[in-house]
Image (cartoon, rainbow, N blue to C red):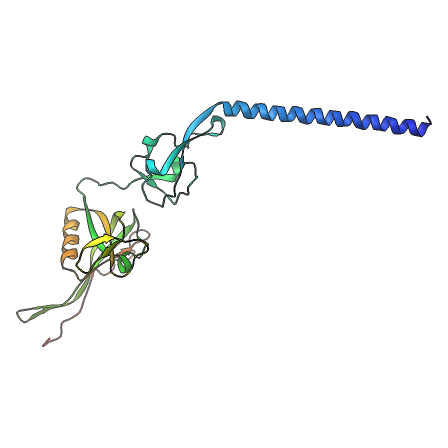
Length: 246
């Protein structure tokens, strides 16, 4: 065997030894990772996972979540682990199905303060809400009254803001209004001839104002309010001046 052949054999031996070393190193690393994974999986903890989409400000109920297990090593105190913790909670924003439920995803549901009344009225689904008012929204309530004539005296037609910055507790399911005045659930989007039950948290005086408006106003509308108090107080009433002889 000449010197060139000996060098070739030596290089082949070194390459084989290097390959064996790399193989042993990789096998050892994979084994260590697998051992760590097995150790982590060995300790599991139970958390709650959302199993159906929950819209913003909708209640987070036991029916909308399921219990699932993840390695304890990957869990932290922000995860919700107990179904009892859902009591009185609503979604702070839209929660997609499959998300692991955490404390920051939920808010306390709106509740009545001392002296408040909970009252629900039917609001025109197309022009009164239009899909933008939801649970927890702050709204103004407007009512429009037609002109009337009583004993020769004409009362002006008026649009009145009867309630200022009140809280919506709940927006119910769209109801179709049948020709005989009955209500029945409606599927799909709101349309003409449908209405929504909207529940408010009000003082006793405001409850009376809303009841009067629902009973006698031609139309009751909601206006979504944003931001802090108005810099300049808005008009609360706009009336048509009756014309003489009418």
